[in-house]
Length: 296
Image 1 (cartoon, helix red, strand yellow):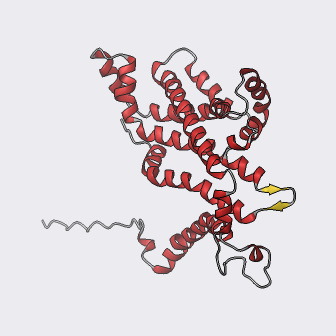
Image 2 (cartoon, one colour; image 1 turned 180 degrees about the horizontal axis):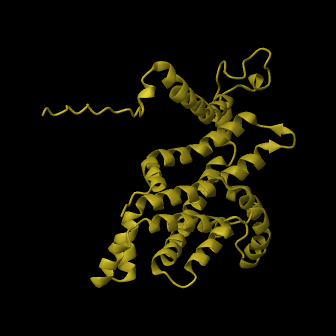
Image 3 (cartoon, one colour; image 1 turned 45 degrees about the horizontal axis):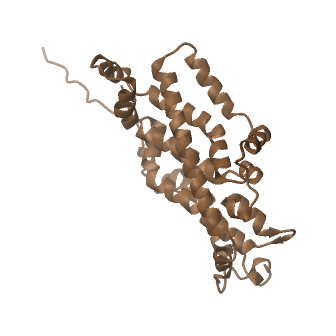
């Protein structure tokens, strides 16, 4: 009796081999990436060339191309840095953004840990209500907040912004950290409790070190919103020396129907660079927090 020879196994799964050909890679990868990069970077390019354009080229499109600059000048940047309060606005924005981010992260960590790990009655409902608070438009909240700011006596100070920004930062940061704390195995916490660790020790020595990507992600979110916030900064700050970059650039460089376009674009470009640098340093942690870095 002769044994039949088994037919060789064939792998019919195509996988990513359809990208082996150059035309397919061009259509499915390179072209979409080129469009995405163009849309992402073109605003920065436009701000950069406008910041160094002489005034004569800003509106004279018959003799000069709007997408290029001939004979760049630093007059707009010089005017912005030395003849306005822009350096002070930039410092105020940094102080407010860092202060509001710190307060928001501290409150969000305690709230998210209590909701996800302590498991008290009504924890899920509390978490849902906290997130719903984020959906309340700031244009509605700034009216009662203005009344509180006036009565407390912190109007026209940086504390007015540092203490009011967490009202819209804490809800979303709490919701984000709740999802990240949920991905950390409960067995780690139960083992620590058996060994006699307190809740504070568990939070500071186990949960927070494992949740660093989530903390960075929430911190980037809070810092970005604080940096770019406009309504509260416009309402609660009056003096020029206490203004932030978004408000100062708009209110001080626009005089009636006269727009200082070169200085406006320079201020917008310099104001966006700190956020870009922050993202570039922590992009790996930010991606890890989106995908979940801790698995059971």
